[in-house]
Amino acid sequence: MRALTALLVGLLAPFTIASPSVKRVFAPGPYRAATNIYEIPPCGSLAHVGSKIHVLAANGTVIHVATAGAPTVGQFKSAVSRDLMDGWVAFAYFLNPGFSLISSFTATWEVPPLPETDHGQTIFLFNAVQNYSNTILQPVLQYGPSVAGGGSFWAVASFFLDGVNTFHTPLVRTSPGATLNGALILTGSSSSESIFNYTSQFTNIPGTTLNTSVPALLNVAAATLEAYNITALSDYPAGATVFSGINVEFASGNTKPDVAWRPVADTADGLGSTVDKDGAVDAQITVKY
Ligand SMILES: *[C@@H]1O[C@H](CO)[C@@H](O)[C@H](O)[C@H]1NC(C)=O
Ligand SMILES: *[C@@H]1O[C@H](CO)[C@@H](O)[C@H](O)[C@H]1NC(C)=O
Ligand SMILES: *[C@@H]1O[C@H](CO)[C@@H](O)[C@H](O)[C@H]1NC(C)=O
Ligand SMILES: *[C@@H]1O[C@H](CO)[C@@H](O)[C@H](O)[C@H]1NC(C)=O
Ligand SMILES: *[C@@H]1O[C@H](CO)[C@@H](O)[C@H](O)[C@H]1NC(C)=O
Image (cartoon, rainbow, N blue to C red; front, side, top):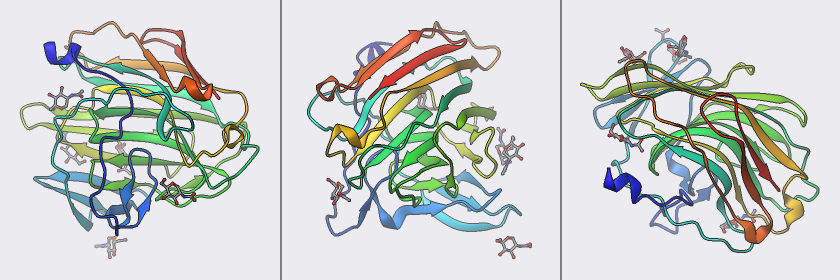
């Protein structure tokens, strides 16, 4: 318990990839080596098998075998506030004590207007479940380029990152004003075998489902604005993004903790994160640009 209270929150980007010769690209999370990117085919899925992660086609055939990243006994980095910061720049999170499993985490938000200026920036907006810094599952709205593709438009995909590898569903274009329902669901678990099956998807957008088995609990929930290569505040969309209808459910039989969202933001850039309505039922978090 003491380790939990000692946690600091902030940027979840403690990874750097050692080799400067490796092409770096953006994925939600830290910079990634371009060699470890896997697109999951339509209706495909991921399975952790020992120290490997199998990418399965819809018919169950293994089409890629990736080596899983070593688990990081990670801690969050302290938040810093500075001009035009990269990474998680405005968010709110809930750290669930290990004794209860998050069985469902859903949130709704609207695709913002296009940013007024385009300097090659990348913007991600998502809800996510993660295990410290090395494993994260997230339905992501992105503007700009990422490992999944993209450009000067909004698009969505589900991502699973394990610190070494990035897996994603194909990008699906969307438009300002569209309503997104990001959902993370625990579909099965066996604590004795350390197997947790999760699904990430936009429930209202076909082709965004990512099923994966994970050998660790994903017990931190977050609603996040993450950005890279912002050179002017007009590279952000105008206004605010409201994550509403935030619902967190816990697996039955577990003690249910009180859910209190903790907001963090890079205020030096005028970004804001507020918890408008706290708790596990119909909560609301606003990220202001
Ligand atoms: C993902 O998992 C859900 C729940 O187990 C299942 O209904 C669905 O068919 C799976 N989808 C894929 C693409 O594997
Ligand atoms: C399963 O799907 C893969 C990838 O689409 C394909 O190459 C393979 O032929 C399929 N196998 C069977 C038995 O249908
Ligand atoms: C984005 O930022 C990275 C890291 O600072 C840099 O290497 C890259 O050239 C930038 N890309 C663009 C398009 O500005
Ligand atoms: C996790 O999903 C896999 C693939 O669908 C399935 O074989 C396995 O039984 C599931 N495990 C649990 C604990 O639900
Ligand atoms: C990370 O996974 C381990 C192993 O399942 C679990 O004991 C721990 O509570 C998880 N931590 C978080 C923050 O999810």
